[in-house]
Structures are given as structure tokens and as C-alpha cells.
Image 1 (cartoon, rainbow, N blue to C red):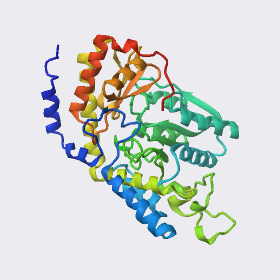
Image 2 (image 1 turned 90 degrees about the horizontal axis):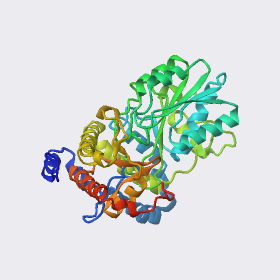
Image 3 (image 1 turned 135 degrees about the vertical axis):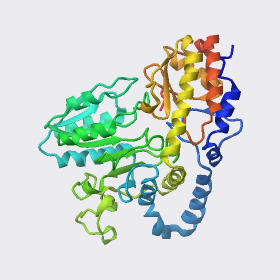
Length: 420
């Protein structure tokens, strides 16, 4: 029986009042395609990217050939400056598109550690995204450092007081995620950054699940360093390059460890001795992936046009609606909210726990909905504000309720295959 107040007409009214509804037309969406609830893993394809990539392949690679480098070489800085201001609280010249998230994490973490040579401890989140942990483990082994993990609640995220308690005059670097990849819980970035600075440490924030979905007060909080990807809420395409942020006041004081020719002061002087470029360019390494950068630029342009505040408002409305539907429809069937209940404390994805989450994920996909699965036993539901409608959430949760009520998911294999 349909719960009062949660009919499709209610979802349609919410969509009719949505100020971002028209932006959905800027993305490639098949009319009969699945309901897409995984925009926090891979964003949709912008319509503009189709034409821009085609023009780049035909007209630039095909026609301009090597002459294309006269404008390709500026792409990394161009995309970084697009994000500065409307999407991230940063100034032009503090962000640049470069390499992958993992490589950027390594570059900035190593640079920060070298800037604090008399300190030997790195504070980390025990439940942080695996690549962040692996890179720090590698740096710690290489440099004889100690990792000091803090334990975040898997559903509610980091406890600021625990992070502060882990600080001391032996801490060189704090590396944390702004939005937790499993639950969507938002860390108190300003308070943690201030506490780390008081202890004399540098801070490096992973923004992969926050950029393009929530405001990130980089300048306001005096954040030192940050990295993030462009293929989630920024819709840059699979494998699109990541960005890095270095506060302007720190740029001349840090030396990153991978000294490639794109970070050289006189790049085409071909000097055999490395002399780092001024500003953010010193954190570049090698030849950028031009075609992928065009995809990242197309997505970044949309995000910059919209601005982060309307996106944040829509994200909170969508996740709150999903929580309401969970409470009304799914909780009685064994689901449990595995994200903060307060909309101010979560990003643009909601996570549900169920002991048979892997089977539910497969059954939900076969019912025409694309969610995500994360261990242990969690359905991660990404509600990208630029193109997700309230009717999408309504219909997806309606189908999940039917799957749970019928028990049809039990016919699916229990074992989890490799997923990304």
C-alpha cells in the first residue's frame, strides 16, 4: 500500500519547483535508460563534451596536429581557474588539472612531509579511501614515519575531537577526506584545519566526494593542500584527470617530488638542471592528457555556470527525500540508514545498510536502477543534483521496496565480484 504523502504526484511537484530542473537537458540521457543513482562514482556525459571532443579529435588532433599545443598547454590551468570561485573557495592560480588523484596525493603529501623534516607522524583516518591509506603507508615506509590513525564512525564520519586528540608537536601532516566515501558524512574541515595549524602541522584534504556537491571553504579555512577528481560530480568522463590545490602562500615554499618538465620554469629551454616554475605550475609533471582534459573542461564549465550553492541546496533536498522514503518504505524490510540523518552533515549521497546489500544491488540493477555497492553490506545511492530528479528517487525506491517485500533478491548470488 502506498504511503500517504509519498505518491508520484508529490515527486512531480518537487521537480516542478526545482530551480535546477533545466540543467538536466545539458546531459546525455537516454529516454528509456536506467535510473542512474551512481553519479558519485561516474557522472553523466555532458552534451557539450560530445561536440567538443569530436572537434578536438577532428579539427585539432586531425587538422592542427602539433600546432594544437599552442592552446592545449594551457588546459590544466584553464580548468583549474574555472573551478576557482564558483565551485571551490579558491583563487585563480591555486588550482590546476594534473595527473590522477592518487598521483596528486603522493605529490602533495611528499611535499608537505619534506616541509616538516623534524616531524615524523602523519594523522590519518582508518576508514579513509584505500588509495589514500596505501600511499601514506608507502611514504611512511620510505621515510621512516609513523601513521597515527583515528577511527571514524563508519556511518557518522569523523569525530573532530578524536582528530584534535591525535595532534601534537610530532605531527607533520594530516590527510583526511572532506566527505566520507562510504556514508557521505562531512568532516568539520574548518575546525580540523585550524587545530592542525595550531599544532604546527600541514593539512591535505581529499575532495573527491565533495567537489561539485558541497561547498568547500579552502581559502576561508586557510586549507594548505587539497586534491580531487573530476569524473564524479564534475562529470568529466571516465578517468578524467584530477586537480590539485595549493594555497598561494605555500606555493613557493613547497617542492614536489616528481620534477617533470611541465613543472620547469623555462620548459622549452631544455636545461638539464631542474628549476621549479613559479606558482601552481611547479606542481605539474608531464604531458597532460589533452582529450580527457577537454572532457573535464566541459563538465567544469557546467558546474561553474550553476555555482555550488544551488547544487548544495538541491543535494540536501534530494538526500532528505531519499531518507524520508527509506523511513516510510524500506526500514520495515531490514534496511537501516548508514549516513548522517542531519542533511547539513552529509554530502550528495545516501547509504543504506542491509545484510543482503550485494544481492539487493544486483536485483535493483535488473529492475532498471543503477546504484552502487560498498562493503560492508551497503547500498550507496548517489543523487547528483544537476540531473537527478525527485521522480527518479521516487521510482527507484518504489522498485527497491517491491524487491524487498517480495524477497526476489534472495535468488541472486551472495558472493561479490570485483567492482569499482
